[in-house]
Amino acid sequence: MEADSRELAFFGLRMAVVALALLLRQFPACSAAAAACDFPSIFNFGDSNSDTGGLSAAFGQAPPPNGETYFHRPSGRYCDGRLLIDFIAEDLRLPHLSAYLDSVGSNFSHGANFATAGSPVRPQNMTLSQSGYSPIALNVQLYEFSDFLVRSQYFRSQGGVFTSLLPPEEYFSRALYTFDIGQNDLTAGLKQNMTIDQIKAYIPDVMTHYSDAIKKVYDEGGRSFWIHNTGPLGCLIYIMDRYHLEAPEDEQGCLSPFNELAQSFNARLKQAVDSLRTELPLATITYVDVYSVKYNLITQAHKHGDYLSTSASFFRPNNFSRTGHLIGFQQPFVACCGHGGKYNYNNSRRCGFKITVEGKEIVIAKSCEDPSVRVSWDGIHFTEAANRWIFEQIVDGSYSDPPVPLNMACHRMDRRDKSMA
Picture 1 (cartoon, rainbow, N blue to C red):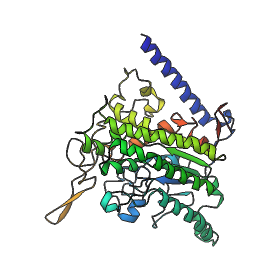
Picture 2: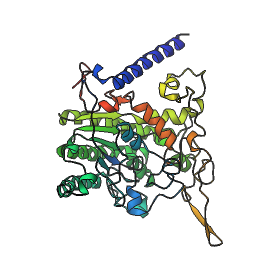
Picture 3: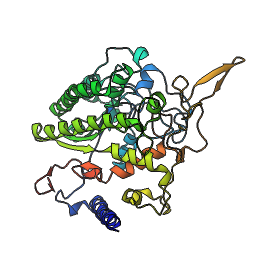
């Protein structure tokens, strides 16, 4: 009975926090800031979790069935549809970001995306073909951003079509700068057969590179930063497929050592963000705990339709569909798009893989019947439905430090009195 009482009390407190956050989103004048932020642009840095076409433009398009759900064609995203960064843009009433490396059909009037699939924070001393990691590490993305900032203003000043395709100068200082990167720095060590402790030992150096990147954006005039931590590695199918015989599972079926590694990374990232808030007095830096949201989604997917559950996380308002029913995800440890095996994942036959039979190409790594009820798209990345669900959990600030909604992320919060300025 005492445990049930504590659970109910926690549930009530959580619902009150969510209700307050939603109220601030609907009525921003209720906060000390008086107005929601007016972000005219987004500049994104990251890996495949937010790549909208960078790697595809440089090294070949992500093949069908990628893009089938929303774009109805390959769109440069390793997903059946939209990513978190797409939902962020939509929520801010901005167009989807064009990849900086994509020269065809791109429009940079409201920002640019420098992320590429496989990008690490630290440069890797191996080629893409050797390691699977993009040569467009975070430092290269920063070079691209600095070049874009200068050259976009020169060409925009020439007039003509450039005025509609490139952002005005003031959009850089008023932009939201989003970061979602770091997972590949951890898996790079795993691919080199390093121990968990050896990987943990180089995380401080990764954080130095990460912090330097944010400082460089700040020096270029960036002021509002929205930073995602890294997700639960031990719950991702491609990790489970490779290491399930070597690592112990937690009570939810994820591989514990790899989740602990991700949590170590996130703890260091949180410390780095705290330090940056002191070093960069004019910056507003929001740290977003996507790890917790993704872990809840993956490990509790099969319970989302269970009204008898006592876990408060199941009763979050955004667990409900617009019709009032609880969302139900299925088979979180089975890829929607893949081929064969326990997880429907084969590293050498990934989503969209083809074979040739009697001179005709046939796709054997196909999409599942209904991606909208699946969590994992291809064993590495999330489905659009999962991305939407994750976004709906983080947009109101419930998983952010400080706990401010996305549309208030330009306002600094004084930790002493919790007011925004």
